[in-house]
Amino acid sequence: MKSFDALLEESVERHGHLCAGQIIGVRMAMLGCRLVGIDDPRAPRHRKKLMVYVEIDRCATDAVESVTGCRMGRRTLKFRDYGINAATFVNLDTRAAYRIISTERSRDLAPTYAPEETTVKGQQIEGYKRMPDELLFEVQQVAVELPEWEMPGPPRRHAVCEACGQMVRDGREKRIDDRVLCRPCAGDGYFRAVDAKHHTHTCQWAPEEETA
View 1 (cartoon, one colour):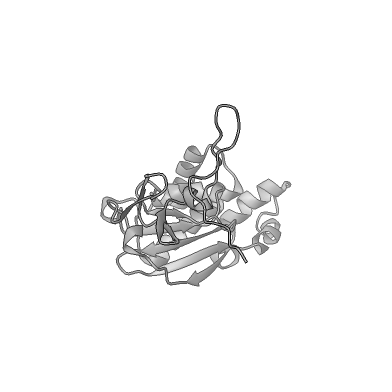
View 2: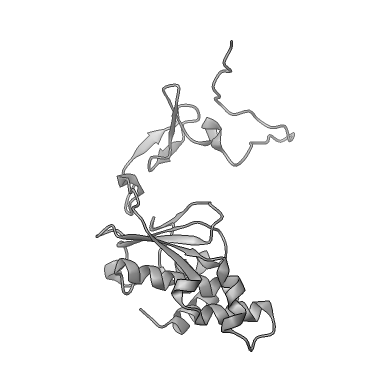
């Protein structure tokens, strides 16, 4: 694996600016790879051996992606929207897995490790570079269930929504009242369809209301 400085430089270039989240993400990814025994995650021999679950859509996630080479399009980067600055690293060969969480106490400790800095931003950037892993992170050894359809490679499972006819891949369909539905038709959509007159359409299917 490249040095911290080299990986940080690459990550900042991809992300667009240097921030504390970049420092945390690069260090988190380096530690995670060491823990699961993958020395160079971007090497061709490791391309499909590492899977990472990220739990927040902020700066550190860009850094984790940059360091590991894991991508959503390759199905090696998974997003779980927990709002926690954490990531879990999984060796797909050995199934060794570690969840690494950025500690809240590191904010208070940053000035101690960068006393020459006069701004909070400067203290965090320099402090997070110097702080030992055991203060910057909390590490948990974990087990991650990996169904076949979560793995990299072509889709291993297909289903057709019985309401709208859309193909649903990778086990993301839902079954309600013995019907196979895509998530929007099952009521789990993040959007509402709007017609040309700006009237909202109802879902094509919805379960009947229970009666007493």
